[in-house]
Length: 322
Ligand SMILES: C[S@@+](CC[C@H](N)C(=O)[O-])C[C@H]1O[C@@H](n2cnc3c(N)ncnc32)[C@H](O)[C@@H]1O
View 1: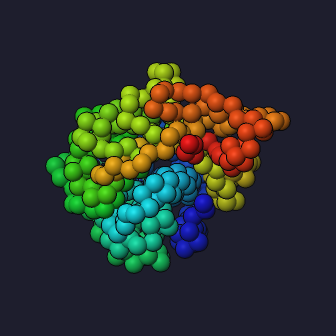
View 2: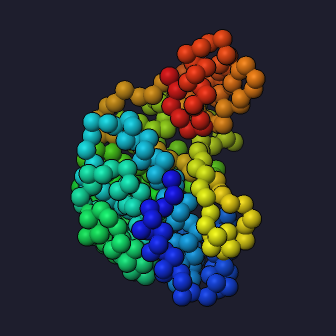
View 3: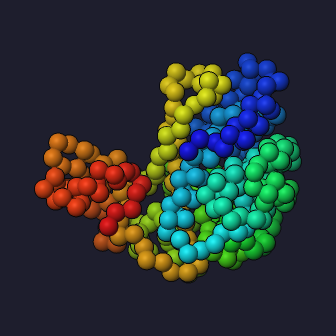
């Protein structure tokens, strides 16, 4: 899903007076920090140009990941009303924007972010939102690791932020966030080995705290993936011409890889399985790798299996399968 038009326009407006060469340099430094996982040392968004490069190049990608996760959570929790959202490590408010696109009943949003300059950018973007909860959102300039508790909200999301904390602090934030969640807690991290390692660790903590995993895991059993593999998913997003220019890329799209975990306060009927890779489609049959309660399974659906054949054609990496 592309950025909401109002957000896209507000970002373009903000960038219109910025020197493109400086922005381009900041964008490549951001990519380099991201690849090197340097964010723990506070160099991730060190200048205003880095912040602007973030909203130009990273915000559309993290928005796409958030949007995919929220759509899946809404599908699995159809009875639950999400009226309030707490966005932890909010940056420019990406997760909150995505939440308002999926959960139309949102009325209250609180965003916690430590960087005051990023809050300024986020606030001015959110002024353009159609959702009044986002327009009038409460922004708190705080360090997550210094807060023993969080205010209670229906949905709590922490998107691409916990990897910037030490593991101990990330676990402490998870504990406080779980206590404050009325309906569900969602954690999203880069779809890399370290991103997934963090999600896997926090998954165990969530189970210990009595969380009901709803996605992507179709069970509460130990994660069956071997240590050299990582559970991640992908969202394709179109690049604008500015985005292409800043990323020095020729492709009109990019694939954002992400890992995530979503837990509900109340039990749900889980999916039976989750598709862990792109299905391999051949003439007359399709192979899929699934995560199930009984571990990893490779299945083949053949054309002669009519009902499943029809379903498998519409099934993609990351979808539930039963
Ligand atoms: C990669 S950005 C992600 C922003 C946004 N959530 C998104 O998905 O686009 C990580 C954000 O977490 C914030 N952050 C990192 N550690 C934090 C802390 N201890 N307290 C509050 N915010 C923190 C950073 O300032 C940054 O804005």
